[in-house]
Amino acid sequence: MKGRILWFVAGTTAGVYGTFKAKRMADRFTPTGMADQVAAWQVGLQAFSEEVRAGMDAREAELVEHLGLPPDALSRAPRVEGAGGRRALPALRQPAPASPLSPYDE
Image (cartoon, rainbow, N blue to C red; front, side, top):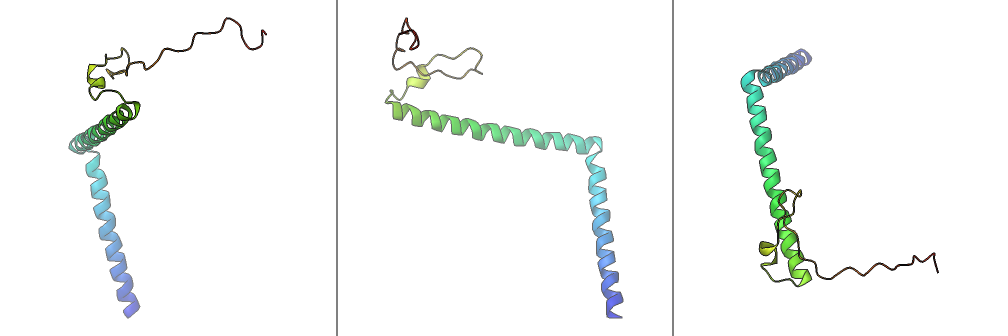
């Protein structure tokens, strides 16, 4: 008798759980449910992009400090075309002139 009650309760619990999950799944594919999913995705994407920007700003500040640039170096730096409006650090030194001969020509 106890076994039958146990299996009855287990079956009832599984049925209620399955019904609840099926109803939630059906609600997700209604126009309102789809709009809610898109809105949630947009909020998540916005939060992610804000965290990435905050991390980039913190890393830029670390680089400015490490390179010994003035604190306002990035605010005065020109915007780079085609880089999403990111700032470019000023060049610290000129590149070495190219040798007219390659190491293999000697």
